[in-house]
Image (cartoon, rainbow, N blue to C red; front, side):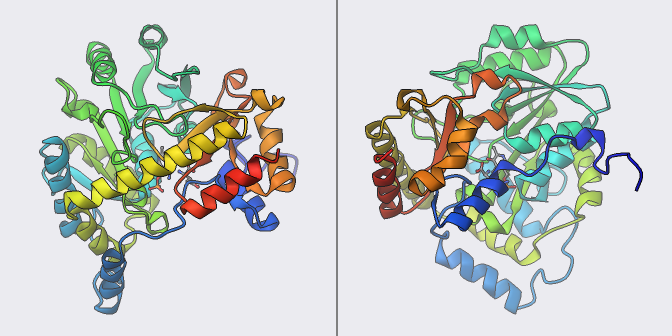
Length: 386
Ligand code: PMP
Ligand code: GLN
């Protein structure tokens, strides 16, 4: 095969995702997996039943329409109206994707030219770096710094150049748990309008906010025509394996994203789309119970990690807690996470892999709390032995 590397230069160094590495380690060592963010309890039974009924009654077993089934596009539009007062046309302004992951990929591949710059909060969710690279664009990190991880918006302003095409924001933010305030969103929106930038808003944790509220940037003045909002059923309904996500945006943006999406998967997960359409129409009580339940788990794990000696950065949203291992006499999060299963049978994620400026994240590690209470308690008991 000659000497040329098989993997192209754009993907060089991206290797295996940390989630795959750490979940494999959890399985191999029989550890408690507080690494990859997936619940150990499935979502509502009636929604699972709706998926089973769809399969057995032949709904969605053959290629559904490329943009997604009309029932789901309508349910997504209704959801945006119900929770945020945002109006989208289900036919031209909503696109169903294979999870938020495909929505992110399709949006970046559709909207970027090689050489464009994308400013994203660092630590960034790992698929951002990969997809920006696949688009031939350059990522420009705005580092969120401990202890609050609030973005420095003067720094954001200073990072904008004539090559900046897009701001990629994520609120609530994985892995720090940061939730952007209305004032922060307003400043980001003003910068986007002033510099004529596009915005991709990854809002997959929109229903997991414990302090304050989730505010979509698309609702702000001048933002509707430049924002691609992305969400997913995985987090909100605890069916991460179904991989049903969606985009809402103005018609020209959806048309662009759809063009890329058509050639990535064309379409996905027919029967699950019927079930997710039902899930989006669950009563407010579902969303409230989901959030209060997770808020309690957040407290359980935060208190436990503090007692075990970690410095804990209490998240405002998401189901992740970022911690610092320095008080335990440790410095290197990657090394720590690789040895943790053997030392005490627990798996966590080293935040450093989400940074370009690795010094800012070296001693930070992330735990998820979307697990049963007894599992969280047992993990804490093990960590206290460190
Ligand atoms: N964005 C963020 C910030 C995430 O944490 C995740 C995790 N799953 C995704 C996107 C991907 O979502 P999905 O599983 O729907 O592809
Ligand atoms: N979003 C999940 C997390 O942050 C993982 C998703 C994945 O494995 N790609 O843990």
